[in-house]
Amino acid sequence: MVERLTALDASFLYLEDPDTPMHVGGVLVLERPSGVLDHDALVDLVRARLPMVPRYRQRVLEVPGHLANPVWVDDPDFDVSYHVRRSALPRPGTEEQLFDLVARLTARPLDHNRPLWEMYLVEGLEGDRTAVVTKTHPALVDGLGAIDIGQVILDVSPESGDVPAPEDWRPRRPPGQVALVWEAVEQYLQRPSAVVETARTAIGDVRATAARWAGVAGGLLTAAARTAIRPAPVSPLNAPIGRQRRVAVARAALDDIKAVRKAHGGTVNDVLLTVVTGALREWLLSRGEPVVASTSVRALVPVSVRNKEDEAGNQVSSVLVDLPVGEPNPWVRLARISYAMRGLTQGGQSVGADTLSALSGFAPPTLHALAARAASGLSRRLFNLVVTNVPGPQAPLYVGGARMVEVYPVVPLARGQGLAIGMTSYDGTVYVGLNADRDSLSDVDVLAGLIEQEVAYLAESAT
Image (cartoon, rainbow, N blue to C red):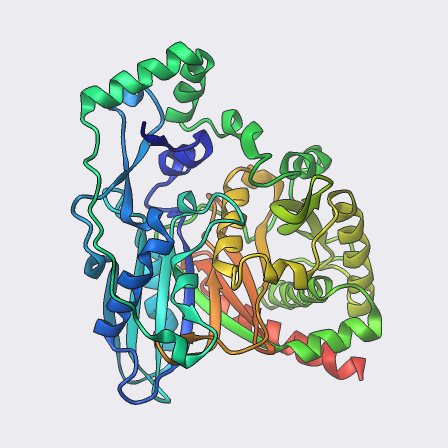
């Protein structure tokens, strides 16, 4: 019996186009001691860890005539060296050059005829550093229990990077077209409603799949319903987007964020949203955009929640929050955001940062992927941008003996969305990745600088 993609995952594949590739990216910057972690070593490490993520050796196989949703099958031609690639910057490679490369890699869709992930070892970064860039399609991530390829290569100490002998993996033979059609017919005989679901999915009707969000992003439709009567504010963040991207980054000391929270209340997430709000305000003003007291920007903000039956917290709920960019006082902005987030998340019993980061080890890639799934399921008329914040461990991690010193998420853009912001805390620092349409937000680096400026101002005012 084949394993079939859910209607939601199939819709991701049908709706994806060259302008809006859906993969989630991650950039891991590593300190590389001499002789540690070259390309061959990374290939060996990934090969040895692949049994932990069996989906990463499978590809999507279409059913003839779209009679049913596609199925997952072992890739008989799987070649780990195809997925783990090598690149280099002209030495000494600067941060700007690194993220120019990341932008180009982000803009390039994954090959749907192969397993839906890629990894790049980028050498030549200044300071004797290297980077690992990952790309993972959200179809591979269907819940907090899922593991991303970027997670399995991370270790808690340099010694644990020893590579065991790879297992002798033999792909199962993919079913032929006749078998695929026959299983589709059997499915319809057992559940006639599947015919309607498949037809709707095949034509990319997101509204038909939206009702199945409950298992992935519980509460998403409730959040949408609360604001559906009010479309998102008109914003330069929303425009037709092209195929090219710009990626910019920012950093903030986690202690500074906690100091602001301690002095003025709210949560760490509230403070980070306040930082983003203040930066967006200054960015809009720098562009000559009209900013008045009532001006706001609506953000789709995923949060992890638990329900009464599940104390561990196994779903991601997305809330729509209006960021008060028209408010000139940062402390009033923080109070308004805290009040809004508290009201939106109380019903879902939000999971705290400590619980969230402990759910499955270092889970940012998984959670950012779930956020991307949520964003793709809502109309662009309901929000202006996606802002994700995923807490990570506050102790060093290693890749094949090389210490990870920075980690940046790259959240994909939904259709009509010019900007997505991902934030991840790790080892005392919050790392911010901004993914933007190259043409409509060519000045995204200005926004990244304003984020760091806003953190410095808030931290100084809080002391």
